[in-house]
Length: 141
Image (tube, rainbow, N blue to C red; front, side, top):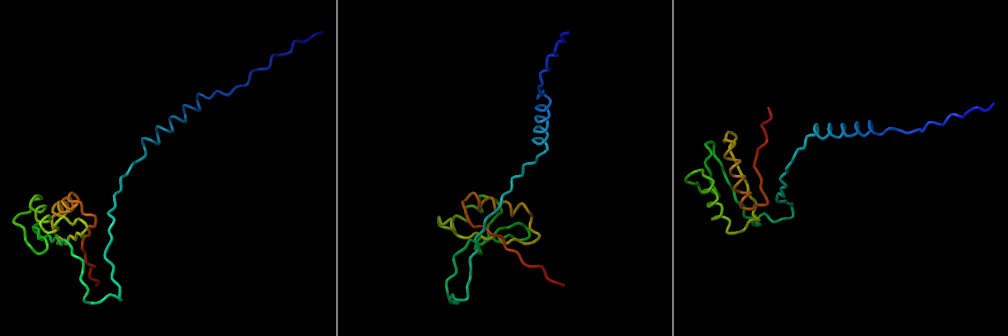
């Protein structure tokens, strides 16, 4: 007696569900990922060493002082108003096209935040590379 052999089944792996799962995971990670844009100001502060002479000339800086009311003073000269254009003109008068000068902002602790942001924005538009904000250490009790 002759038996018929069974045809071997074709073994195959269906990849469609695997591909669907991978695409769903990809979409999930794309949607759930948060992209943060962090910006850091790189500040190169002047260095001092004990070997330098006490009478050496300090580098010229642009000192911007902001009082509690948001009024500006550039290198000791008070401005007539706190408009960005007035601040820009006063800074340009002080720097004489030297954008490499250190730009130092000294603001009162209770100064409106907008005044400091405006000063930083004007300094950035004028192309200052070195910007620093002065602070003081808290008094230990």
